[in-house]
Length: 180
Image 1 (cartoon, helix red, strand yellow):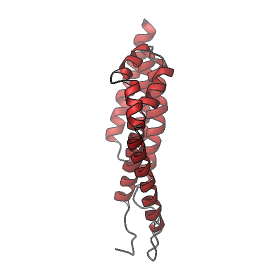
Image 2 (cartoon, rainbow, N blue to C red):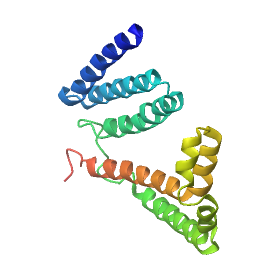
Image 3 (cartoon, helix red, strand yellow):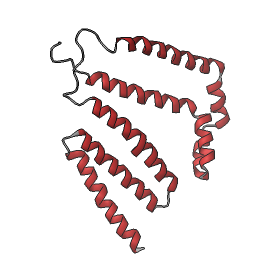
Image 4 (cartoon, helix red, strand yellow):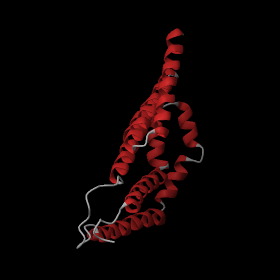
């Protein structure tokens, strides 16, 4: 009991200090690193509560993948980067590739909706099946429910994250010093 209390107070101090570091740091990269420390301390709180699965997901998804994405976007938006060549837009060919990928994505979604694959998976899983699977505590059944019955919302979330990252890069793109 004493170890749990001491570790709770130490983790609370680390979480509070890292949360203040997120808010008070002027450098965006240091702020992101403080946020990673805060998310890792949250995972340790979950370990104190004997929630191993949630702690693992906290480290893998939030402190790992999402923070790497945020850190990538923040470093892409830092001012004072390399200037863009004024004669040709280096991203011009990507508009065509992006439009082609958007058509492929729209075609795949339309095919899945018209063939009934989305509705079949949703009916097989049921409306409250995910909450009942979580209460059972089996990670295998949770994964099956997530990637079968709820695959469409899962994929839409991934597309939204990519669109948000691309939008942040597009909004943060500055003209070169010689150009307009």
